[in-house]
Length: 289
Image (cartoon, rainbow, N blue to C red; front, side, top):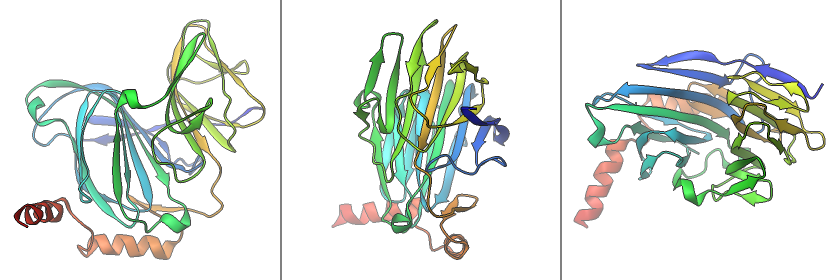
């Protein structure tokens, strides 16, 4: 059978927002380098000063926010700042340790706003787990779009269908947002060891095997399977080559060993992680100098 696993999400409440979490799963920890995958929305929220994700840490990963609809402001302790609009992508390399927050843009307080995004974490290779943190923001139109006769694919990370995203990749990987028109099809010309399709809406089949909507179907990369849709669909395709070393995860910390995992968690508990406040004072000092 082409499809090896079907992963149904479990629901996580974060304030008024319900998240569908696909990875990590009891069935599978990773797909390629992807060790975490959430879908938030589509929903509407009444924006307050407490909305969004307040400051929190990460290490050992590159975290990714793909904003399908809405607006968010990103700030991090490495000096990264961006105002994200629909279709934008933010990639934050946590490496040795970083803190950040994502909030609705300031002028939206008191209003009812749409919110719909994908959050993913990509585990970093062993030699980059302690790399310097960094941040990059890619506007929607800077990402390559591949157009087919009956659909399209936005290549968000890595390489697919002959296009390479400008987003930094640390391993061979792909993340793409695909749409297929009613009655259309899309060959999945992706040469990776592990690939999954998260069907967000509509109907689809992979080599005639029906896919479950709001679930992630993992399949074995053999030949060029064809994704078809009778009524039209939108899906996220993700994957890459399998990791040769294990990964351990504890809340927002990811590491190749339990020793390193505990070291990072201990650093955060002891107040040794960088903070948004320390970055603010560093910027003030730079202005004075």
